[in-house]
View 1 (spheres, rainbow, N blue to C red):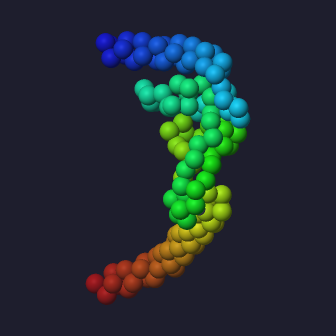
View 2 (tube, rainbow, N blue to C red):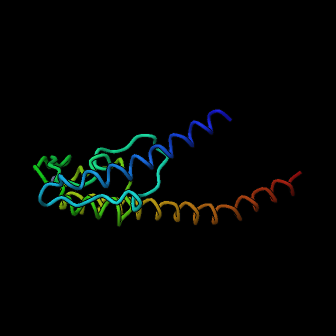
View 3 (cartoon, rainbow, N blue to C red):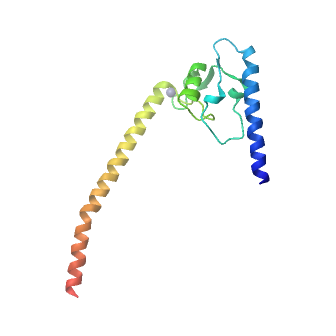
Length: 144
Ligand SMILES: [Zn+2]
């Protein structure tokens, strides 16, 4: 009971805080930044508030690709698209450059295809084996 009240209070405090910061901070938005609309973010159960939400706007974020090590910029526009339109998790950030993301997507698709083909083969094998097992069992019963 007490915990529920605490959660409700924290949630309402967070939403008030979100409204206040998102309005207040738009005055000092740097050129090229995009305002955050907290209402468009994907729902989450986190008590924390990500930096970009506290700030109230997206700014270009430099990062190094995890796979090829190329220095990259995750632009404010891309972040806006990811968090508000694609409904990406608010705690995720860009870690791969575009070519590496495409390669990774293809790798995952191939792995999934192989996995599903394996499942299908396994199912077909077990379907074929089943009647043989029944026949073997019947023969065993006949011998008794
Ligand atoms: Zn890369």
